[in-house]
Image 1 (cartoon, helix red, strand yellow):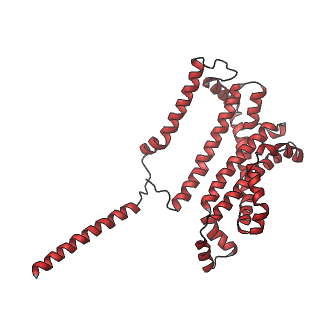
Image 2 (tube, rainbow, N blue to C red):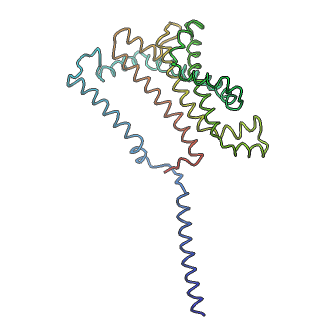
Image 3 (tube, one colour):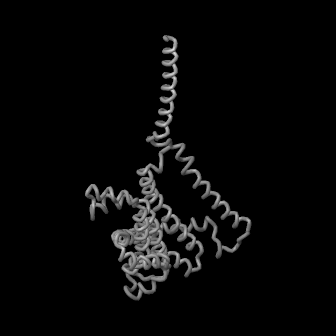
Amino acid sequence: MASTDTKTTGAGAKDGSALGGIEAGLDALETSVTGRPPFRQTFREKIFPPIVATVVVLAIWQGLISLKIVDDASKLPSPGAVWAEAEDAWLKGTLLDYIWTSVSRGLFGFVLALIIGTPLGLVVARVKFVRAAIGPILSGLQSLPSVAWVPAAVIWLGLKPEMMYAVILLGAVPSIANGLVSGVDQVPPLFLRAGRTLGATGLRGTWHIVMPAALPGYVAGLKQGWAFSWRSLMAAEIIAQAPDLGVGLGQLLEVGRTNSSMATVFLAILLILFVGIAIDLLIFSPLERWVLRSRGLLVKS
């Protein structure tokens, strides 16, 4: 009997040890490293690849010039010519003015679109009659090229900054509203029932239940709304020019075309691209990571 008990006890200990190992493994899977990754890893995974891509593009660009595959500078300027144009604008003190004029307009117009598009999206998502009435209109406006609004805005408001903000709003509000509608549609009904059970109804339910649950779709709508804001602004700046409007990146692009200066045209294009990438990296990418991480969809490594 003693030997039997001893064997049973030993087997139980082995089973307990095995279960303990499984539990430890599961805990290890659920545990994420919360510390910052080393700079070497960050450089290798996030900084080095864009640098390599930029160098490759510049090498191909310069190769087209050096090998005389494209030997007409009026069609394709060299990277050095574009750099000289940027350096000249910097020395004149106008380079930052070009960027700031467009960025300030774009961000201000986007904030206005955010203020208008968010409540509009909530109303469309939550009120069936409103959704049936203007939901298709919002979808149609989202697919309408923003440049189509520029002539009408010029006639309505004249060559004033308000004209550009109107074009931005008409381009960005539908995207923000539709993004929020999509996010609200993906909220599980269980969340809404649980919120009503706990007394979260009306504005309280919208703030504490609907908006947090709809964040992924809402953030996607914000990102798309900014893209439409930036495109709309560039279209307005290219078409509408006046002394009172100043010179933004769109006007700089048109000045280069008017003067047949491809170096200026390429400089404007690269600056427009740079601003778009910078806004995405500084604002929307961190916001997306925060939303995904808060839902356990993005684990730090």
